[in-house]
Amino acid sequence: MRKRWLSLAAGVAVLAATVVPAAPAMAAPTFKVPFPCNQSWSGQTRTNHSPANAIDFNRTDDLGDPVVASAPGTVDVVTNLGDTSYGKYVRINHGGGWTTYYAHLNAFNVSVGQTVGYGRVIGYVGTTGGSTGPHLHYEQRSNGSAVKINFNGAQALYWGTKTYTSDNGCAGADTGAGTVNTSGTALTVRSGPGTGYSAVGTVADGAKVTIYCQTSGTSVTGTYGTSSIWDRIGSGRFISDAYVYTGYDGYIPGVPRC
Ligand SMILES: [Zn+2]
Image (cartoon, rainbow, N blue to C red):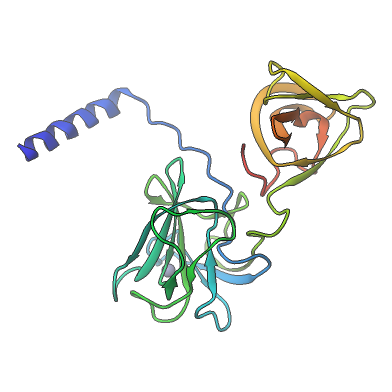
């Protein structure tokens, strides 16, 4: 019975795949370097790595150094594979099909089911499993497949070795700064990311704003052209990015999506 059900299910899945277009991949979280704020680590990618898109991180005397969550999520694997493969490793589930892997750890600092945020120490650099020296093996996966790694929306170096400096957990690292530019009139603040949301106030021309997250909403033509990006500047307070100088044409690197 078990086998029959399985094969039935597989048949349905194949049929569904032929008529339903694949769901688009969810936007990635804003991943950060998996080490504490301001630390610099040498990250290496190489074509003979398994999986190829993983990064191995090193720095001098790194055995036992803390490893931190590269984005908010829920810890869903804390396990020890012994002397093979990843050895002691942690996986964090970020939602939307996105996971990150932290392997060859010396020790753990989290348990399964725990919610973690940026900068949270999850374990310590080690040389467990199939490792020949202390380092952190790190992966970003989308729906189970290891993809090319991004930090703050910028792709890591493929292939080669590069120094990455962490802004993970730094105070203020996850917000953006903007200046309202309307050429005079006050800018309407909306309760959501669009002109259809109710007006909940205004910000003056020239006002400096803190941008906590950005999202897509109604397309607006303003001082900086046409944009569908909306900036959340407070709880239930959104303004059109078309009127905000942020230094970037699109989304601000490092600022999360709402
Ligand atoms: Zn590795």
